Amino acid sequence: MTIALRALALAALCILPAIASAQWMYLDKDGRKVFSDKAPPPETPAKNILRQPGMKAPVAAEPVAAAPAKASSAAASAPKITGKDKELEDRRKQAEAAEAEKNKARAEAQAKEQNENCGRARQAKATYDSGQRVARVNAKGEREFLDDAQRQSEVKRLQSVIDRDCKPAQ
Image (cartoon, rainbow, N blue to C red; front, top):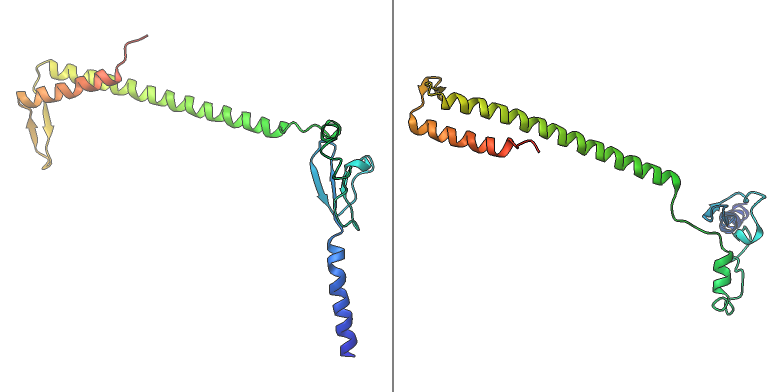
């Protein structure tokens, strides 16, 4: 009994590759290769069926020796493949538009920040130029008044900020 069971199992394993090779390969209406375990739609011409269950190798439309001589006629009869998918092209355009919008928003935010820095720097420079005594709080939390050298140093720093961020209207 076990020998018969083993023989049956061996036969099933030998048939398995034949069942697994039941694949269809054909060109769809857009010229793309389709691999399926189901037959192509009835409107698919026979010349577009490249492989079907029970075939050893893909179907060759013409003999191999004649293929180089008739390559141009085979290429002319083959479906035209544009290489562009409309949906993919639309998604690419949307992504580019989103990126452009993001860059525009980033540029506007940067311009706004520069404008605010310019206003603060001009206001601080006006305070230093007025001659009023200016005090700072040091690391200990104590109030210190700036001497003339410190004032000049701060005025130079503020002027560099103004030169960098305050662009004249164009």
